[in-house]
Image 1 (cartoon, rainbow, N blue to C red):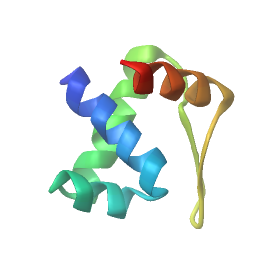
Image 2: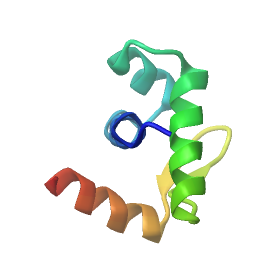
Image 3: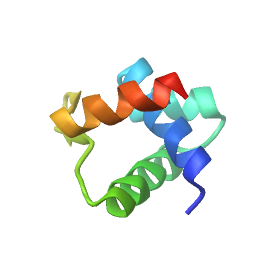
Length: 72
């Protein structure tokens, strides 16, 4: 797992509000961005994003992790 790429994907998803917009920002595919975030969640052992068909929201753990990664 490329942790830098995974962190970048998470930040892009949170800041843009969607996987599609994050993929465009990263010049990547939606599937790749989704995979990066999923790999990060697996690595950390916690769900960072609550996904639905219409919306993406940070979980409490995701909010904490996002705030720490933004400082880095």
